[in-house]
Length: 241
Ligand code: TMP
Image (cartoon, rainbow, N blue to C red; front, side, top):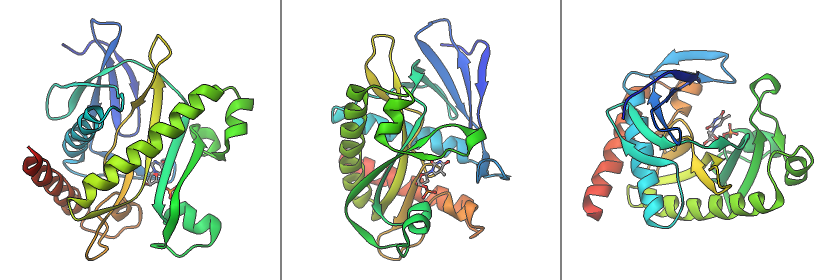
């Protein structure tokens, strides 16, 4: 399958049409942004790592019954995916307080939550991706009641699967962001990516951050952290075979 016209360029990926109207090619870049694009930079090799990691995690999820857009890895940076209509929500699942949760609710970063929390942001850069609740989602017509039930169930299921997998890598899954989309028949499936850009991943023993917070917070060792987390994933997946 080959790339045809470029349909879209986002902050971290480009999307291309293919000769099959039901399939797209996503191409992962090394560009990194934070705080709604106010901070910009490059994380060398990030696109290669995020592409491979997201594909491996989506395959793991598929094996456990979670439908995803993943079809086939085409090259280091390019992946064939099912075309979906993206539901404009950032679905955030948290196991441990960090980031905006700690700020908004006054909870020290690193405090375990008594049960996983789920929140939605309205995916809209000009509004700064504001937090919204389920009734906002229904009132704005962003998703139906049935779709919301599916999204909530899938998000919590994904959390269970990924927590367990990352634990086998000696990594704590602190929180992560998901995006879902609709196939032409209306089925809701997992889309976008799962990578160190979209998850907080802490070394379980030391608490060391192995994710994009190293870039967001100017902690240094950004490329090293992406390489380290990828190595851990590959070792653990190798052992699972
Ligand atoms: P937050 O604590 O800043 O709200 O982030 C929660 C999780 O969502 C964290 O794992 C990082 C991820 N995230 C994204 O993937 N994209 C974003 O634009 C933001 C703000 C967070």
